[in-house]
Image 1 (cartoon, rainbow, N blue to C red):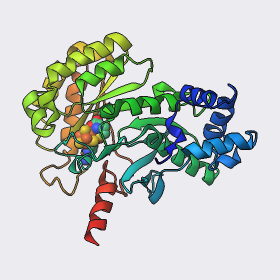
Image 2 (cartoon, rainbow, N blue to C red; image 1 turned 120 degrees about the vertical axis):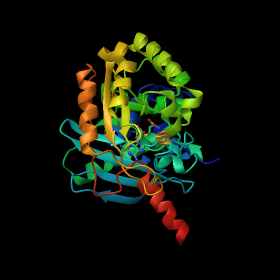
Image 3 (cartoon, rainbow, N blue to C red; image 1 turned 135 degrees about the vertical axis):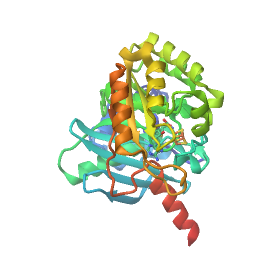
Length: 355
Ligand code: SAH
Ligand code: SF4
């Protein structure tokens, strides 16, 4: 059996594992500190951990399962990483710079089964879920890259918006979130972490029942079922009414603002009429709602879709505002590199098939 990544364990799991293997309680604190504060790359670098324990760890776990295949750096400081997993699959991770800090976008699955008609990730069906270790390692690799540059920069925010549907990989997602949030390690505040879902309503209930105060974003993209089903086939299984019921439950449990993502697709969902419908849909939730208008990044394979005109985006924005809905427009980072989610990966896969 191949060894698993040590980054897949939460602090409690690590502590239990070590104690079951005859180690003292404090050992977990030491190991955790080496992993997440000192960020070593080799078990033998754990200086205050005795040799027997280091051997025990290296016999059972690995510290590296991801290899950096490509690193593209944009003029605005965005860095896109393409990682190769142990089984040869490729995934993407993106570091973005904002005035409030450094945010990393992580991938949760190899491909995606939701199959939204505009998305590059959905072109390649899911071949498997990522393990929690593989999700944590994405952040660790980015942080280690920053450490190596030596400017004392820290990943301060996380968006779970890379390839895949995070709520379809729920347990591994949760382990990842607990590891990131742990104040003995990276200590990334739950309020600095956002999980984006295409709207798996039944999983939104489970997410609401967790004890983490992580932000939730829902990819809505259309204000009525007909339009939403035409661009997101998941809407057949979880139509807007079902989704909004799950939203009610989430709001009742968490009382936290939800972000609704809305891709601006030219002449598809960007008319004033849809803006009015959207504000009606969110009217009762408007105190805990924020609409993020996302200018569409064109994807070579989806020639049917174009980015909305700036004037349509502006009008949509103003209509929502005028109806009392909080909203903003998210302009992209890394425009000069393969910006759209899943693009670098799909390009690389196409290239390797061509040779
Ligand atoms: N599967 C989850 C999270 C990953 S996608 C979800 O769908 O929410 C993250 C966000 O990027 C989603 O809102 C998705 O709709 C959006 N997205 C996908 N392709 C895009 C593109 N080409 N341009 C702009 N946004 C895109
Ligand atoms: Fe999957 Fe999200 Fe892309 Fe839809 S938008 S195909 S859910 S990654």
